[in-house]
Structures are given as structure tokens and as C-alpha cells.
Image (cartoon, rainbow, N blue to C red; front, top):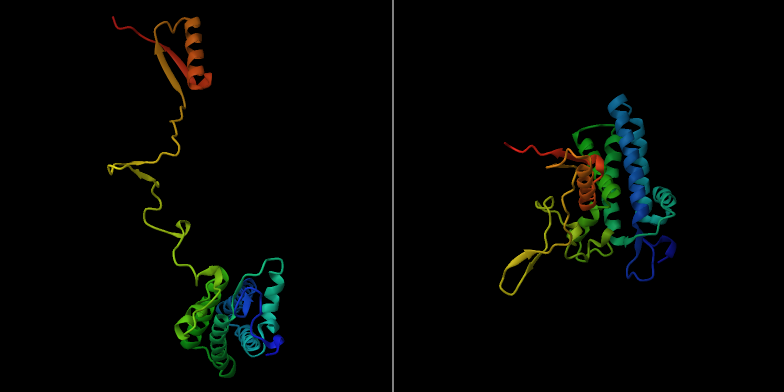
Length: 251
């Protein structure tokens, strides 16, 4: 196959053609923004012209990706420019091809309904909503829903998924969410008898905000100064947070 028309890139260390996930997410963001603005123009002003141009551009772009090569896609080229200073994140090309096939079908359906037939119905609205959801998940979370469907309809398992989700078997602790997450975590140590106790990493002493002392002889300035100095040394509290009161002896 002509390397210029190959779907995906041949990169050392990868046994299948791959594409750059970063430029794909950037391209999905561009597509989402264009669709969202077009829908706002429909809602606020009843202007259907921009969305028709957006649909045509999407359909042509998906066709170029699938039938020529992703490297010639205008939207992907723009995304490539945006993320040109970022290291590539390679993902498997086969699952992306499947996902873009879904995109082409949806954009073609929108083209027939809105451009050719010039209609706007519930089906059109649902199709547009599906497109928005797919693009939003791709650009915001790096989740390619079409790629997830790839494994359901193909015998071969998807390889080189974003975030290595195809290969992760067990989640790391930082990825886990549970109902006790807000509670203080404790590490328990057990001895040979089965007794357990928390493993203390650090003890935090109560912070002293102020001290009040009642003692005999506090009326004497010398005694009061000695008590004040002793408390400062013992507790490390400044003098303005210490109050020495004279103890009243009951008669």
C-alpha cells in the first residue's frame, strides 16, 4: 500500500498503524465548538445556514480520513498544528477508523435530512445530540465511544487505547472511588495474636491559642512576671496570649 494513503502511521515499537490521540482530541474539540455555535444560532435566531455548512464540512472531512488518509484531513491538520508542541500519544488506528465510520454515517444522515431534504425533525435533533455527545466525550475526557464499540463488533481486540485502558486490569489506589473516601484513612497492623492497631505516622498536638493561670501571689509583679516567663518557655506561647489572675482564697 502507498504509505501516503495508508490509514495511520507506522511507528517503531507498535505492531499496528497508529494515530496521534492528541491531535484527534483537538480536532474533536474544534468540531464540537463549530456544532455548538451552529446550534446556538438556530436556537437564538432560527438561522439554519451555518449548521448546513458544518455538516458538509464534517462529511467531507470524515470521507477524506477514511478513503484517503487521516493525514490529509483539514480538521486533523488544524488539530495537529494546535498540539504541535506536545508529545504524541499514539493509539491504534483500526478502532479510530471504525469510530470515524460511525461519524461518517451520522454526518451523511444529517446531510440528507438537513441539506438535501431541508427538514428539521426529532430524528435530526437526536442525531445531532448523539454527534455532540460523541465529540464532547472525545475532547473532554479522551473517551472514544466509537472505539469502545469496536471491540463489540470485531474479533480483534482494540490495541493502544488512550490512557492504556485496553491493558489496565486493576485500578491503582488513586483511581478508586468509594463511599468511605471522605473518612480518615487508617493503616492497620496486626500482631501474631490477631490484635490490631493503627499505624501512627504522625501525632498532632492540640494547638494552644491562649492560657489563663490563677495562682496565689499573682498580685505581686515579680511573681506574676516569673509565672509569665515560665509559661512562655514551657508552652512556647507569646505573652499577649497569657493571662495571670490572682487566686482568691476562700475564707
